[in-house]
Length: 91
Image (tube, rainbow, N blue to C red; front, side, top):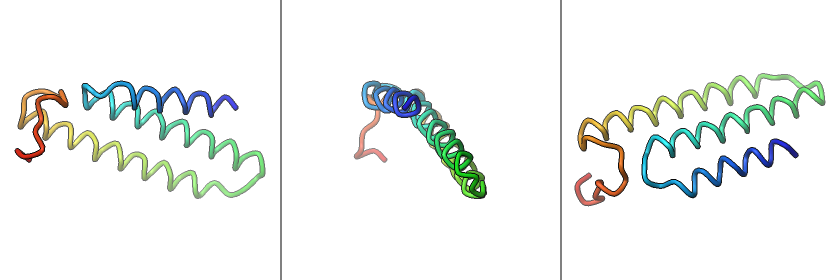
């Protein structure tokens, strides 16, 4: 029950703050971390194998590195991380 409330807080931050790319990426990482802990505790409660948790952690790290690379390329090309300064036609 607690993980669901924390998950909803992360989704609320993701949906409410759309001005900076960094805040959006941080909220996505927060949601992935909550999902990681919830799957870990779920699998531990039934004494299952934890290989899935390791794969999930690897994919969330890859997702974070891709998000940071997009952030760095957008800051280098536009100078900031505001969504209002980007145009779809320029990309």
